[in-house]
Length: 435
Image (tube, rainbow, N blue to C red; front, side):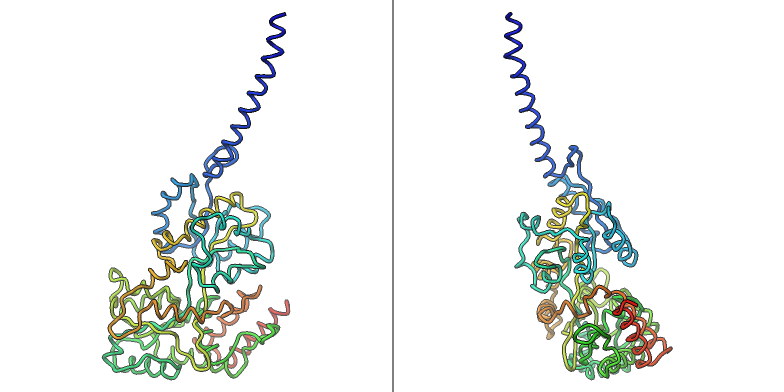
């Protein structure tokens, strides 16, 4: 009798204790997940796909701090830029992926977001103590947004600037060029008066985002455009476009270094660092590297200015961005990693130029006496930065490739500017028509 009563009292109590215990364990797992563990209680490892660059080398040194704080482990997958672009398209469009975070060209962000390939980051960023839209120049937040939601975070706030040998300009009594005629004049004087030194260098190598990154500064500077205003047809046979390509290829052939038709940003940067060239027009991100005394022979001898222009000053616009695939397995952990890497403190330590705190640090380089500080040049240039410097359309890479082929064919002498641009324009129209 006593045993039966004991069972009636004790068994419900045991069940209640078991339920409470299971609930407590469940709550414990949820909290642990937020600290970097999976639903099975195992540590989360996210896969981060990007290219190899000095900023990520520094990131790797700092990752133990992030992993200790969050419990999230980061597997950094390094690819060269061309394979990265190709693999990104495959991964984001696949029904499943092992990639949690990837670095991508901002030009493709709208395309991927519109197709549903990306996870919106707003709710994660809003929960971050380090994210603030005010820490970015507005065009750069706009460039990673689609229909009012943020789908990526900028690593750079970048555009083209003019980098020149201030000591050579002083020696030869040259003034900083503000027009294309003045730029050519300075290149000619340097070439003719400095033995073994090219007057100017810019990208000549064929490829989307290679020679086709720099040339639009001249295209827009002469008043031209890739497409007609309604973006339904190419505009590359306009007199302004032909004038821009004629100028760009002529100045490089006359006053550039041997082999300039094969130059990417790497060769542009290296020639300046080795003291082989008097000027370049290219991405501002090259400037701090050229001012590194441990690697550059010309550190402390450089001046910086906005790009020249005739009908317009067109410094361009660029950013590599971080995004999360819509089918990523660990979205919350991925977003936490992005918020950490783009935080003012970590981004500055790594050497990125976004957010604004990092921009101030990276470009705060002492100016050559009598020249404008680099940070002032950057701020003035970024005010003119236009996300649609190159058309942000779904076929951007195809259109850019067609343009790059035209530039290359003139540099190698196989076509005239008019012939090359006529062919490119026909190709662009074919692309836009989906043929």
